[in-house]
Structures are given as structure tokens and as C-alpha cells.
Image (cartoon, rainbow, N blue to C red; front, top):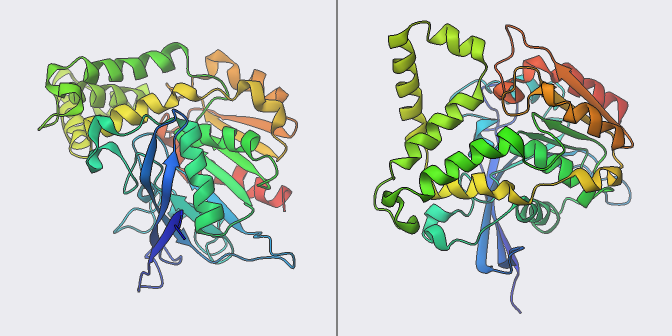
Length: 358
């Protein structure tokens, strides 16, 4: 009999993280003969994940304390729990004893999404022959990790940042009875369009039209990757912080070059290209009325990717039966789009959501 999935778990010996919460346990779940929405298949698709805490089931066997945490484009689950720190801006504010996602109380599941981190991705060997994936493929893999791999049949909460926020909107309508609450951060419930589409197209074009890309068969990273990294740097923060960090002509050049160089050291052109283009099938608008679980959407006034001037969130949230939206004003604590990971800014809203959906 052929198995269709494999779950491998790496047990971490150290029981407590420096941030005062249980140390993550890492593992890999392998889906066999996975079919993408394009019709392409791979004999194996690996999704890497980390968990904190333990699942708790009610008398009917339903898991009641699982929380799915989803990262943004080009990132990984490790960004939520960075190594060698006291938990960082996310876990350090949320996972400790008495905090909103106390890891002694909740079963926290943090995957590296398809195409990212230690999960299956183009740079593993297939390069541009890796099947084109979209957000619906990524969510299918997440769902299979939960149900087939970790045997989780219900979620207390789905929370996601940026791309993970967009996934959260889709989770609510694809699996409306699977969770108790939803919290998308730094995202909009509408098709990628306007400037948001244009900067993504710029990145795709910078890589695809670079002769050094060689249809994905490059030996060294193509120069177009630098343009992509520059674009992502420009969109990721707010203008006040950029001016503060680079107050002169020369300082701006130095900050820009240093930051972009550091980003490029972690990037692969094919991986980034696939991740950016994966948003092609994101269009939650037609299904917003299908979302049943209470949903709290949080955006930030200084987010260049999801600017509040568009009024999209305020308009569309009215179509979500149990939906609410909060726009956090720009302040000395916000850092533009990246505020989605700075939990100190918004964790009190999460705490309230968890209390209200208990």
C-alpha cells in the first residue's frame, strides 16, 4: 500500500526558549503525488514547520487550542521565532506565559509556506521547472499539513502577516467552519491591482527580462535580483523612518546599498519570482460573505503596500458577516508594512479577539 504523506519530526532537546516559552519543535511533512491547480504534479512536496505547545482535544476529539500562524512573501516561519534572541518582535510579545498566544495554553503551528524557507521550492533543484503555484496551492498544503500531518481538525485562530494575511482571508471562505477566529494583518480583501500589482510586476520583469536569468538556469544570481531587492526595500517601511535613517545624500546611498546587499544574500531569484507571482490567483472579494468566523482585520496607516487612502478595507469588511477592521495610525511605534510583525503595536487587539471568541 502506497503512503500519500510522510511526517518527520525533529525533537528539540532544549525545553525552554530564551524568550520564556517552550522551544519550537521542528518537522517536515511530505505530501505524495501532489497536484497543483495548474494540473502539474510532483511526486513529493515537503512542507517544513515548527510547533510550540501541545494540542488539546475536547470529549469529541476536536482540537480546541491550535493556532495557525502564516508568514509573508519571501519570508519563513523562523521570522516569527528568530534564533539567538529573546523571541523577537513577534514571539517575544505573544508566546510567553500570560501573553495572548501563551505557548503553554495554545498549540502554535508555524509553517514555512510552499516555495519558502525549508519547504519545497525552485532552488531545491527543479529551478524554473518547479510547478507554478498560487495562493490556493499554498493553502491546500497548509490544510494537508494540519489534517493529514498533525491530525488537527479545528483551529482556534488563523493569523497571518502580509501574504499570510491574504491567506487568512481565503482560509475563512475555503474552510468556514474550521476555525473560531481570523486575524489578517497588513492585507486587503481584494484582487492584487493598482500599485500593488505594478511593483510586483516590476520585480517579475526585472528577473525575467535579465539575460543572466537564462530561463531560470543561472549559475550565479542574475543582476535583476538587485532591482527586485531594491523594490522590496522601498515598499517595506515608511517615509519617516527612511528619512531618519538616511538624512543626507550620501547616507541615503549607503543605507540603500547596505540594506539591499544584506537582503540579496538571503535571496534566490527563482524563489522570489515564484513567490511574487503566486499572488496571481488571490481574489477573495467574491467569497467574503462565506466567512463565518469572527474576523478582525488590522492594517497600518503608513503601509505603502496597502495604503488606507484606497478605502478598500473599510468598504469590503461590511460584506463579512462577523468582520471588523482596525486602522492603526502612524506613530513612533509603527514601521510601515512591517508593523505586521511588531506585535507590541497591535497585540491588545488580538487579546480582545481571543477573549471575545472564547
